[in-house]
Length: 244
Image 1 (cartoon, rainbow, N blue to C red):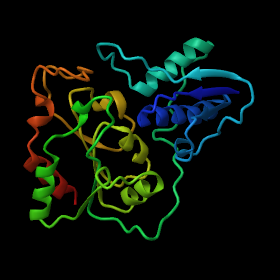
Image 2 (image 1 turned 120 degrees about the horizontal axis):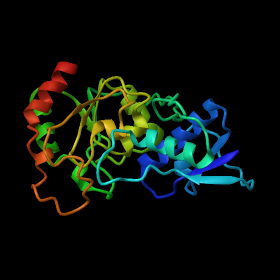
Image 3 (image 1 turned 90 degrees about the horizontal axis):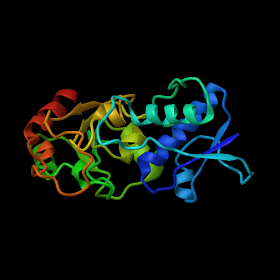
């Protein structure tokens, strides 16, 4: 049994570490997962560490200055194989194994929105989200912003599962809901790219092919965040209405 952990408070990384545990067990390598926050542990349906002494491995995909074409999960699995001298491990779980329980009080809406990301890099956010909301109102499309309303945990899964479309960003929430989403559209910044973090998820990514993408910058963008600023809200809403 091997303990897989991350514990850096970035939701996406924590969830991918749990996803890796499920994949390792599918592969025949017994693994468990742990986080010191009970709220994190309650999110995923994987074997949890019971305190028994065992080998541990920190979920690690590195972050090269240039993208090498692999997903973060693929890189982590390859790093694990190298450290434990194992053959290549197939990705048997395309999404995070979450704990979902039906909440009858939540009935869903047309579009659920994730408008905020962690402090890791605010460049992943879409600064013109309020314009999208105004256009949705004009077209009579109902929406709910899960980020602004501070909705967390199983309630997030219920809202996404019971709504027609998820509009998200490159962030932990998009990792979390991928397994229950009906249709999903990601507004992808140039910080990274969709094929780096979410290639196995059932989303369409809307992005601009800017020359500076995959910058991995947290501060100091020299191009005024054009990767997101130049995505027109009307184009996003037109695509949303086609989905609906």
